[in-house]
Length: 128
Image 1: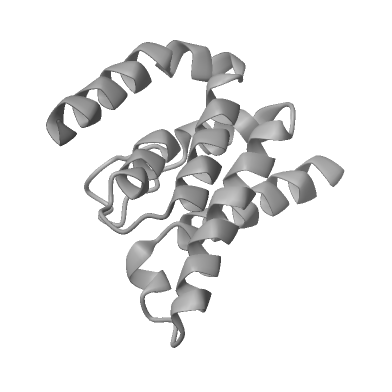
Image 2: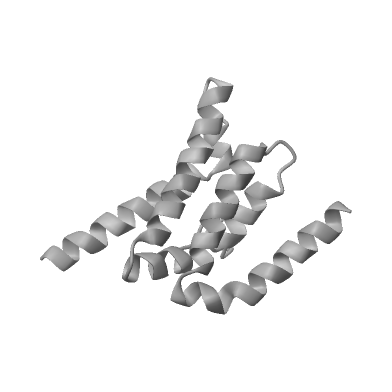
């Protein structure tokens, strides 16, 4: 019973994290400050989910953060998408790097490390 409740709570938190980093959903906010807070809250929630030990971190890395159900996008790819947006501020970029670091420090995240670095190098190459 407690295990089922834990799984349900983690599922709700993952859903909230996905909604928190959804740029289209954030753009529906009426005030610019609320838009930024919406995204930052989602990034902070992702970072905090990486700190939780056990199945929560693994579920976070396996969760589909894509807006299109036919396309699979993990949390790291979603964070990299936000990082590369033109108007992403420095404080938001730092939060993203902190959350990405948290995902890479997990057991499953170490296997994704090679993919992550290839993505970062591709982004840096495209910008210069």
